[in-house]
Length: 235
Image (cartoon, rainbow, N blue to C red):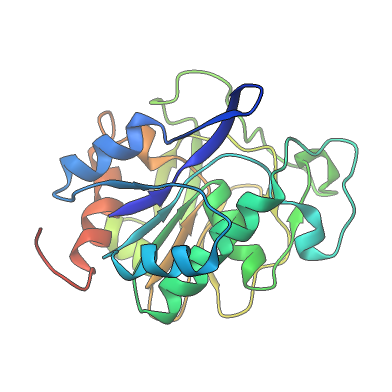
């Protein structure tokens, strides 16, 4: 089980690779062995990295560069990192070609959507329809938003429910859903909160289940399902 590391500048010329500990803990708690994939700009290295994976989690982080969906940056876009977009898209492409299950979380879901030809609202304020608060700004292990799951979807089966409560930490929203993806969940304002591809080997969720895995037991279902669907069942 692996996820790409974020890169962050510490001092001039010195970077680090990391992911938040919640990702690591949520994988271990549900029977997986976590690895961090260091960011790099080498396609052959990326291919070799993916070849060693059983599953891939695309984590949260920077805004997706709007050039990837044919737009220029608008006033309220957040920090972008185009090189990370390219890296994550290479990971996703290789994972899909190798039939490795993928879970995209927050930015990871948005990245999957864009990689499949979809688009984003660069900020929640650019959506014309009335929109709920989607960035609770506090207490990450506290659900604050109601979402409805599509009947018959993989997620509805995982949660054994049509309605669940999630946390919310995003200022961008899915606008146009990418090709081959089906909306699995929507907030009460109609914002897409989750999607899956045809065989549910690629799932994207807009909330942060890794932050809820201790306080909301059902959120572990996303990680146990991902681990169960790996090429090598059982670690």
